Length: 405
Ligand code: UDP
Image 1 (spheres, helix red, strand yellow):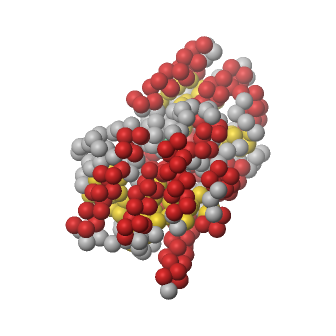
Image 2: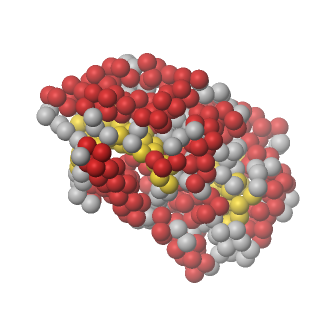
Image 3: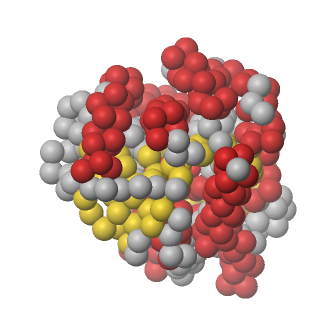
C-alpha cells in the first residue's frame, strides 16, 4: 500500500518529552518503520517546525518524512497550527500534484490532521483512517489542566462521522468515543500501541546507575511530558510517606523550556515538603538513553489521571523494571498486579505509597525475574501491531471497492 501519514501538529522526529510531544510521535515513527519493513510505502507529512528542517528525508526503508510550510517556520502554539491548516493542506495538495504522488489511504494523527484527511476525502476520494491519540471531550471531563477548546471537540465530532475507520489504542477509548461523540461502533477498531523491544532492553542495574551518576539507593522513576494530567505532584507528595523507610530518590525525566512553569510548580512543591534534595529533575532525555534510566530504577511510577494508552510503562517493563500505575489507558492489561507491578485505583499519595512500598520491600530483583517482566510485554512488539494496522487498512480499501462496485 502507498500510505500518507499526516501529523500536521507535531514532527515525529522532534524531541520527545516536551510539553506537547511524546507518545504520538513515537507511535508514528515506529509504526511507519514497521510498515516500511513489510514493503509498504509511507510518506509522513508534517509542518516545518524549524527553518533548517529538510524538505524531505528518508527515515528508514520505504519511509520518508516531508516538511511543508504552514505558518511561521518555527514551533508555534497549538491553536496557531490550527489556523495554518489551510496553508498546510494547500501545500500538500500541490506537493502531490508537482511530484505525481498518489496514495491508497491516508492515516491522520490528532484532531487537526483529521481535518486535512477530510479535505482529501472530499476532493480526491482517498479514504482516511484516523487516530486521535487523545480526545478533547474526555480531557475536559477529567478537568485537570487547561480546558480543550470547543473548536477541537467540534472538529473531532465532524471527522469522527466522516472518516472510514477510527483506530483506538484501548477498549476504554472506544467507549469514550461512543459515550462522548456518539461514534458509529462498527468503524472503531481497537489496536494497542507497541514497544521497541530492540531498544528497550535491561541493562545491569549498577552499570546503568554508574553511567547516569546515580548512587546505591532506592530509586523511583517518572518519565514523560510535564503535564498536570500526568499527576507528578501526587508522586512528589508520596515521597515523604516512603522516605522514612529508605534512602529514596525520585528521578523525573522529561520537560523542556515550554514546560518551565509546570516544572517550577513541582520544584516549589518539593521545597515545601522539604524533599528537594531527594528529587532530581533531569529534563528531556533522548529515547536511546532511556533504557539506562529504566534499568537504574527500582520502580517506574505512572501516576497519571489520564493516558490514551501509556507507552512509558511498556518501555519500563521491557527493561525488566516493575511499574506502579493508576488504572488508566490500557495499563490494567499490561501490568500484572503482584507480578510485574501494581495497578492503583487512583493516584492518591497513600495508595501510590502502599504499592511502591510493597515493590521496594521485595528483595532485590534477580535476573530471571527481570527477564520474566520483560517477557510479559513481548506481544506488544511493534511488528505485531503494524500487522494489525495493515490488516485494518486493507479492510478499509476492500470495503471501498465493494461500495464502489
Ligand atoms: N520520552 C522520551 N524522552 C523524555 C520523555 C519521554 O523519549 O525525556 C518518550 C518516552 O520514551 C515515550 C514517550 O516519550 O515513548 C511518552 O509516551 P507516553 O505514551 O507515555 O505519554 P504521552 O506523551 O503520549 O502522554
